[in-house]
Image (cartoon, rainbow, N blue to C red; front, top):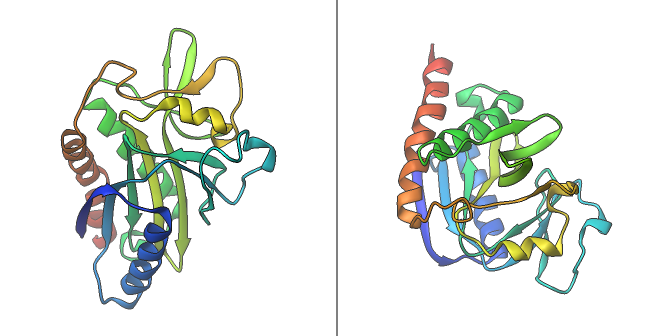
Length: 215
């Protein structure tokens, strides 16, 4: 397993190209699995279920076809994106469990900052409920090619939340549902601090999968 943290903002096209290359290398056995932590410049991505009407401001930022599952989402500075390239053949070929593990990874990471992240039936991602509202704090969008995963998760550490106004985030639109961040909840963190929590929670969730698959 390799961890990579990119400094600065990584262009989306570059990230897609790098993921494609790494997935093929993992399949070929020439490179190890990879967790890639990064930030993107402001942009919108459209998943395979994206609806044209959910792009409310088409000219606001570049829009990219992502090839992952899900609908529209925003990426930008202050949001920690984690691209997850794992070999599910070695870990157990179960895509549903993989997505569940991604959710658990986010929940355990947030718990380290006393934030309660929750799943919601029928809604992808992780949510924070308070004061009669449910706000999304993390998005999940994955793709699996011959049992190697790519794309991954995006957690709002301290992005400009107004940029989510250009889309209907993940196709969910209701008066009491929105988007939040750790900063908006009162937790001001550096990315290195957040990354330490991410890595510790990942090892709790995903290393147990490796041990179970080996038994």
